[in-house]
Image 1 (cartoon, helix red, strand yellow):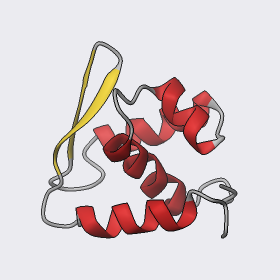
Image 2 (cartoon, rainbow, N blue to C red):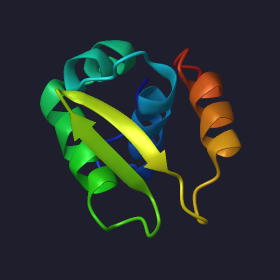
Image 3 (cartoon, rainbow, N blue to C red):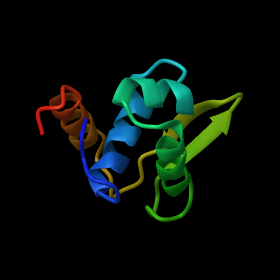
Length: 90
């Protein structure tokens, strides 16, 4: 995956990894996406905060879980985007 720094698509890929991976931790997401752990942690901070209304992500024992997608983000769209871009075709 090679989206430039600051690109919103990095955030969507991290969200897709949380959805796809079993017991997604920052390290597992980093390995899955080929991003530095610090970059993943920055994206997780955005996703876990109030930047995306309605999206609720919890953290327990180092594992992130999507509790609620809210009404703005569509799970099917994130899943399709993640699957399409995981191979690095963009």
